[in-house]
Image (cartoon, rainbow, N blue to C red; front, side, top):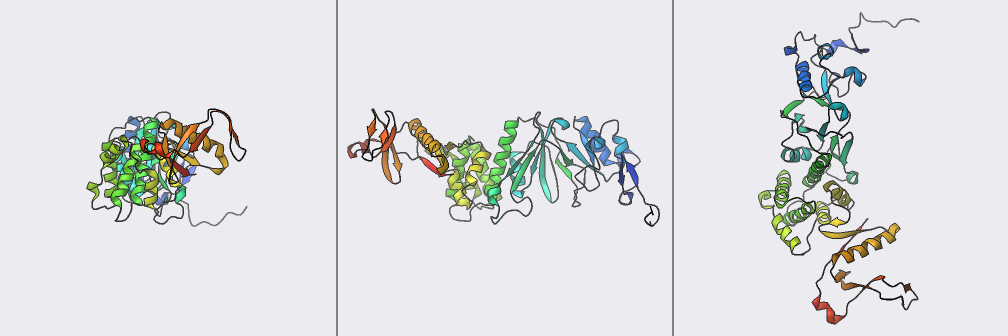
Length: 395
């Protein structure tokens, strides 16, 4: 076979079977103190973390992961070039290390307040984009994305529908690497790692994701006070305290540039209404005032840990014409659980009753004893009964 012509000897270095073009690499650093990558790797090892060698200006290793795992024994041998990158293994392979990877700019601003106790790093184009913590047993990546917003105006140019990720497998590029875009990855808060439970981590991530979307699509002037009341109702449904809700509402308003942000924390008023049995607005109203598709409401509830049957402290029945039996069962359960004898339905007052015996109506429909019926009450009984409203939501 005829050899291809060459222009002199190719400069290269064999590293565990992978040929690196040394034309882009400096001379090997002669001592550890002159090689920040080696110094950082040894620091990570001393903290029980598992570093991994990454390629030059790259997020991936130059070959198989196992060949690039850095240990105390091989660190000096495989980190011979100062401008290789360095990563940290995540999950079970990384000593239980997990990464909050915040993609949206709003998520990074919310994270700065809600994740402040965790070590964080980033780069000039995405400061505060990574927060690290320990969570033994967490070995997956959970994306907090919102595909319902595809095509909606106002999304970020990058990671349009992915607000953040909780990453517990693979690896993450760590300081002192250089991002593929040429920006230095640097520590912004290098403190001791904290251990979080999986439930706590997911709750924090869901709250950050929710508040990030709210901040990005925060309403224009006019109606902001009503919006923040609805936001307070939503967050109280997520079992946050009044103080936590006020902090979150003011934070969102500040991020959105609301000049009256400091006045928006009124969760105490909303909690009082709930305690007195008055109706309050919540997630449905939040979604409506943000101008987002109705389907977003279900995702918001999932992020905040609000069950499908829990909405603003009132039962909610999701209407699905393909599952009418389930809808009727849930509606009956909600009526019986409330203990309130009269309701508003389509502008009229109704109450629920159970049949004492089998009955047949004028249309020939037979109903068994104990069947639940909804009927209009007699006029003389109406003034003595309180009124409540249940929610029937579109699925």
